[in-house]
Image (cartoon, rainbow, N blue to C red):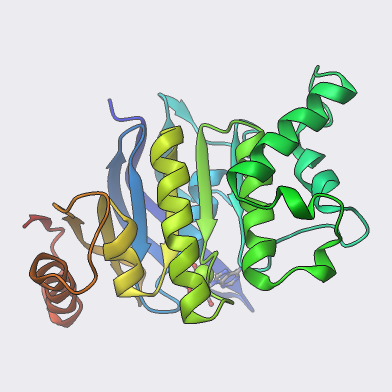
Amino acid sequence: MAYIHIENAGKTFVENKREFTALENVNLDIEKGEFICLLGPSGCGKSTLLNAIAGFDLVNKGSIEIEGKKVSAPNTKNVTIFQNYGLLPWRTVQKNVELGIENSRLSRKERKDKAYEYLKLVKLEKFAKSFPRQLSGGMKQRVAIARALCVDPDIIFMDEPFGALDAITRMKLQDDILDICRNQKKTIIFVTHDIEEAVYLADRIVVMTPNPGKIKGVIKVPLHHYRDRTSGDFLQVRDKIFELFNMKADDNIEYSI
Ligand SMILES: Nc1ncnc2c1ncn2[C@@H]1O[C@H](COP(=O)(O)OP(=O)(O)O)[C@@H](O)[C@H]1O
Ligand SMILES: [Mg+2]
């Protein structure tokens, strides 16, 4: 069975006695080490699906399993990175990165060294003693990435992590995250509403549509890890996604271009 197995998953919220189906009949298998983008317009259930896989807010139909075990709560082996960085303003950059390993068996010095190593990885070692308020948005998000990697997670969940950044900083961080994550061979589930971002990053793109939130199709991106946004191949994948968003059919489609 796949590393992450999602079968007929559904999520209904009840508000003011009204039911709202945020996710319906979601079927998806994810292999270890894959970089998966959940792509779709606002409100199509991307965060709902991500939170369900991460165990924050469970599905109420079907099932989600990781390594054969039903997801029933968040697992400390996984980490989540959000759009708003989630740094503690009263802690230095170094101390923010140490956050996730404070309850580990490592000694104080080992913790410090390890955090520093990851700060180097995101090229922020010079800012170890700075406070978050002294950093730009892109730098803050790199601290959040260092903190996430420092716990050596199995799965990294990212919910529109670059959504608050300007276009140029975002492109730089996309390169950083690709470099880092390919080297570390993590499984990544990355939510975005940005088609180019998905084509640039993903091994496979899960295209979702709203009302109710569904998977419209899954697109395997047949490009090299280092991608050229202007190449014909890149544009071909992008066009395929536009096509999927414009299609009426309800079927699940597994595309390979
Ligand atoms: N806790 C909740 N209670 C009620 N409705 C919710 C809740 N969370 C999400 N929704 C609804 O579910 C739909 C999908 O939301 P979400 O997963 O956040 O979409 P996305 O991340 O794709 O923008 C939205 O219409 C949203 O209003
Ligand atoms: Mg969302």
